[in-house]
Image 1 (cartoon, rainbow, N blue to C red):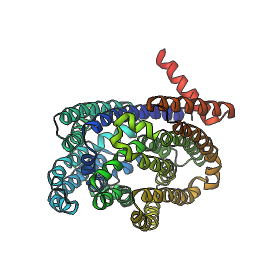
Image 2: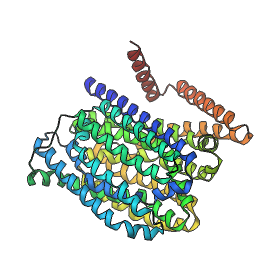
Image 3: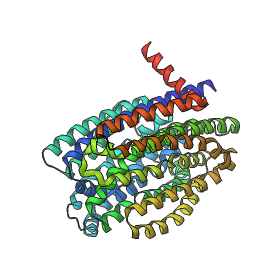
Image 4: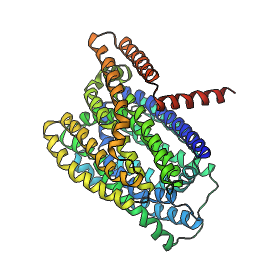
Length: 482
């Protein structure tokens, strides 16, 4: 148990360092690019997001999760996954290459033809390093991944800023994505000793694909839904509106997606290793859920409260229309880690078939709501997304409850006090904007007030999850100093 806890803390520490540093670089680069590039240019790249996201899902094909979930992987398994993913990535690129003119015609944006042909090269590049990344994750080695991803982001960010200064506009964003893929792949191959052997096993393929195919279909459905806003907004509204939406989503996802990605990628291999020990599995799962939601509620509601002065200070008043989008996205995305963690435990228990059924059920409910809401504008669409997020959580928790004996009733009893604290603090923080102080003074006062109220409240309540996180952080700081 102690070894598992140490591996979890070590994995989470480096995973957070990876994401915080990587997102920090991306965030800073994004601020510079947003000041150099018009909102419509961001919107143009956003138009193809759904197509690249679908292609990425096909390239992985659920093999990453299958390789991590399988306890006794062989060289044959890894090589089979490598060759299959490489074949799929090349096929996906060819399809998008020839489909580019039709996509450009749909959006009435000729530049998309060449943008698709260049940006989608990253599909093949990322597939080449898929197994190396899986091996690092399987060994809970997120320290190496942190160094690789941050280094790649810095290099790509510098190149993108130089291109933007030279007036390259949307192309600075396109090349940024390609350069990140190239250097990430290069560093992963230099870091890992694994190399594919010249062997493809149909037996291994059937075993991996048997598990991964259901996850692939579930991920495809989820990916299409998560990215469906891009083509809808891009087609029925202006590129500038889509640009405002992409910025709002990027900032809202900075905390929510980062937290959920960290938790799932570290907890998945760890929970998979104890999947047969129900008592230990539930205890670890419950601790992960409570700690994650404490951070998520605090960060997402806090971000919604400071949205207006933050946007003005970081990227200028020309981006003000994205503020209401950002606030609504924060409210919907704060539930995302909650329903994702429940989905994660279903995968850990090997029930990829149930993941697929859940994704189908959720999207049958969600899609009609999206097309009804879009008639009233983007804000209505995002309000509908909040409702869908809550529904998704209850569906996932209903089915995960039987697998770990942790029903929604118990989960809500654990997380509702955390939501109440975050809601009260964010209400006080938001009220500061009503005094119309200088933007810098407002933001600084909001951050200080939010930090004092949050820490003070949890100290007064002696919340065990907060105290454990505090101890973990202070212990790590002491070790670093020593």
